[in-house]
Amino acid sequence: MSQKKTNISKKREPLSDRRKFILNMARGVGIAALSGFVWSAYVDEATASQLLLRPPGAIKEDDFLKTCIKCGLCVEACPYDTLMLAAPGDNDRPLGTPYFVPRDVPCYMCTDIPCVPVCPTGALDESSVSTDGKLDINIADMGLAVIDKESCIAYWGIQCDACYRACPILGKAITIEYDQNTRTGKHAFMKPIVHSDACTGCGLCEHACVTEKPAIFILPREIAMGKAGSHYIKGWDKSDEKRLEGATTKINTTEISKQKASDKLNGDMLEGLY
Amino acid sequence: MKYIWNNYRYLILRRVVQIGLLVLYFGANAWGWSVLQGNLSSSVIFGVIPMSDPYAALQMLAAGALLATNLLMGVAVATLFYLLVGGRAFCSWVCPINMVTDAANVLRSRLGFNRLANKQPASRKMRYWILGLSLIISAVMGVTAFEFISPISMLHRGIVFGIGFGWAAVVVIFLFDLFVLKNGWCGHLCPLGGFYSLLGKFSFIRVHHYEENCTLCMKCKEVCPEHQVLHMIGKKSIPVLSGECTNCARCIEVCDDEALGFSIRKLAEKKTGA
Image (cartoon, rainbow over all chains, first blue to last red; front, side, top):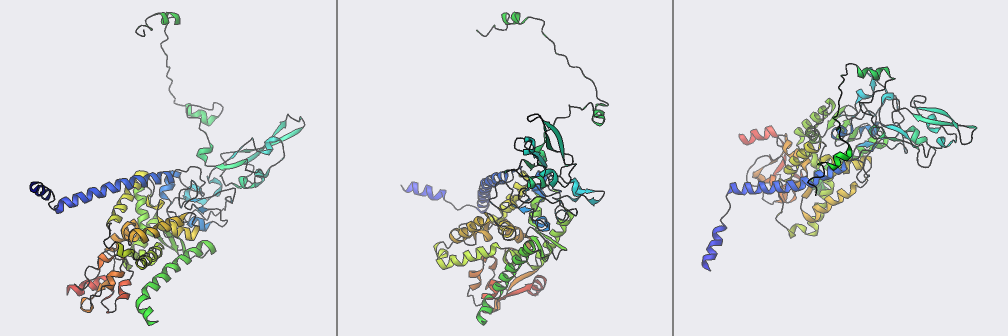
């Protein structure tokens, strides 16, 4: 019994300072690893949104998230209360970053773009909305208008050009295409068409759309557009055709078996299977 | 009246400054005032002088963002300012969370939680771990890690731009400080406080102890939110040199014996050296 007691007291010698320090450090690292895991999982989740519309001149979303300091100077500069800062609990909106919802308040495309030059961090990049050193809101790219032809009443044959009239670059970003209404045989379709090269994504069309839920709406360009891939070349487009210049030709041939399919099946292919 | 002046003059002044700054920020967004625009992450004073949170900039750097000149200027202004007035002067004179945790602290001692657990179960070094962790997560995830969870920005941004669910974070901190850990958030966890502690090591304005006047009443240690910085009380006439001191001046005003006062670092050091 007494033997045991001395054993225990031997084991409980006070820790040396160095050992204490190392153990404490290890403890710290353990806690840090756990909290770091939870923290980064949260941050990952909190910054996952892709469907947000940013102010004009916003840099690529990934870079935007690391560059925006969330000061709200752009929000304060906006004369129309278009821009807002995402508050905690706003679904899918990275906390504190500026965004706008065009159905509520679209971007009115001020020619002096007051929201961009005030940005202290360059998350809103002045050069991306400038031509020849002058601010030019018409080259802004906040998103791209997309039309749902199913719910657009103009595509049904009802006359409506609300989006076309609302468009600040009308005739370029939205045009009206005339078509014959074969259902009635005597009326015309006047279909709005969005042109991605001119559309800035300001959302005045979405704001103006008369349907219950807008049939024309703004999506971030990357989401709204597909991509054909570089191996498709428009042969009728001189500038696109130029990509063929200097292209090398390489012919790939595949060795085709001369055997008949039945020979192949009756041959050694099945051997080893049974 | 004299009693209030003697015992609460700095506290009252701090509340005036804290609330005054909030009103100025709020007015910038609500009524277009231009005294103080933006928020604590990045501001513009009188429409000219930039001031940016150096810790946020550090996270941006870790995340791999390009730091704009404007931002760097703002960071320089803020760094110089807090080098002058004391790093954690931010915590006790500017940060809105200070009012929340101070309230929790008062209530805590009234309700007797301080008697329940006299020994603090947690280390005040945690903030430096969290500071380091935030930079690691920023680097790995490519976003500013603390800025997406900071209750300071949530509250401040919330007051200026709309709070959403941000009040929940504030309530959590209040309850944590009230029930779980005395000075839990500001004194143990907050990495921004940790950052300013590191900066504050080099700052000029310090609290100075005059041992010859001290009657060892220990009122100062009782009222101090970072009582470990007052280790010299009754022992040595030296300035409080720990960066963890928030320059809140509570110790100065509760002292009835003029054993504590503000001093300028250089002069103070010469005095003690002589």
